Image (cartoon, rainbow, N blue to C red; front, side):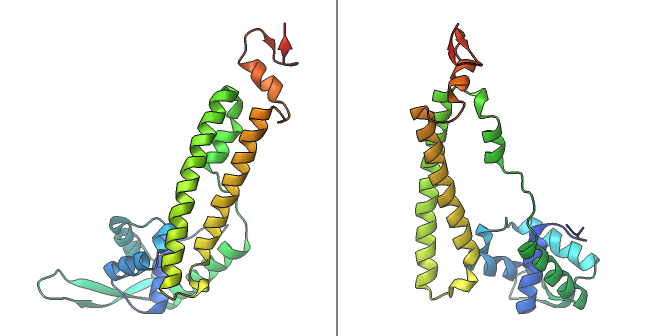
Length: 207
């Protein structure tokens, strides 16, 4: 992966926003939230201003003008530079075309699953399924809201992608629970043996 001058993913959003038109950071944030882009990239005002300053230091954005509305503090409007446009398109091209390893918390937990007793693991996985079901319900509500606003699908395909991942995770986890409970998961007897003092862990039988 290319080493970026400003590696925070929020920088990518700032550059993409400024391709549309020059904006001040507050306008960027409100526009992104109105479009639900904060569902895909973590957004907070403190980090946003820090990222804009870093982009300016590296010549990727520049101040266009300073404006004031009433008694509000002055706001600096930024625009993207030629170097910023090149960085944006190079970065976005890499994200879309080159898969990268992401170390997920759930994956880490699953890799250590046998540390827990099977019954405990089933209970915790069931709780995860409940959270995923709530997440899916909320996502469907947001999806319907976006669609009702007449927003073309191309502008929220990332939301569809994440919803598909949640659906797949929920189905996979439910299947895992079923396999553990029915003892059809390969190695489950040895797993039980690890948590039963009188069992032979290698055979899953009483000693």
